[in-house]
Length: 327
Image 1: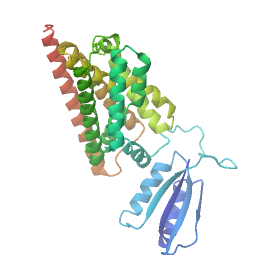
Image 2 (image 1 turned 90 degrees about the vertical axis):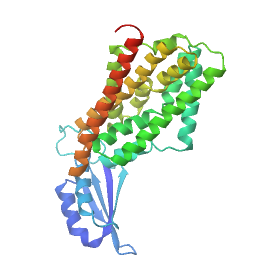
Image 3 (image 1 turned 30 degrees about the horizontal axis):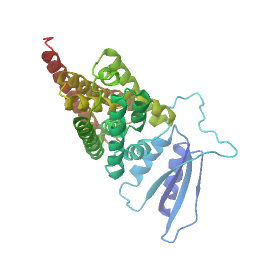
Image 4 (image 1 turned 60 degrees about the vertical axis):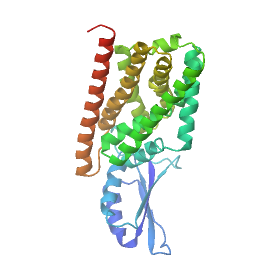
């Protein structure tokens, strides 16, 4: 349940009342007129009708740049409000396309804080991997600065947002490159155990790793759209990208190319599986572009990303098998 506030000219009053009643708003009311002639129309909206209501409002105000739509949380109500007339109706998502867009956008901002998070988590992961310290490795996983851009890229491809695709892809690639550079430098200039169990484990890729990454990517998408934020920590531990990336850089710095290739493949598989299962989960929950052009862009974007990642993995797996003399 959310509060939707519309700040617009009073000429929209009758239309907004019609939209509120048609979309099943739990309650609505008008404020007094503001100094600039606008009014605030407030609606209490249930989770199962919020997306269709917001879509209707966006169509209404598409040409009116002065109108504003605000979505506010409702922590509690006294007396308790009935959110849906049909209590048995399945609600796939408790958030809207616009709310989720704002949420994932916060995780892709390439700023000094993001850079520091990547650097610090890379240092933690490097130490934990070399010393076989599982607790430290888990700490690096929980920090997980690369998971946000990865999920944002998956969501952006689903709704066809080109701007968010490029922003999240830039943050993801720069974050991975920064992780590789920091870990490589540390490993190259220091004496560390580059054949620890934690590192060697991340050079072997099996069916279990693929299934785990697929399941975790779906769980990550579900946790973001249903409001179960606590489960996201477990997802970070399961599919964190930093430990495989750090393992790859550590082995590369010590000239263990064959083992490094295995860690690289695990990194790419985790990345791809989060993309695939995340996008499928977002699609299952009904997230689509609002306009026809956005939906067409989403189709082409998903096709491109899936094809690109799958072909890249096929090339790398074939190269690794050739290097090991399997083919």
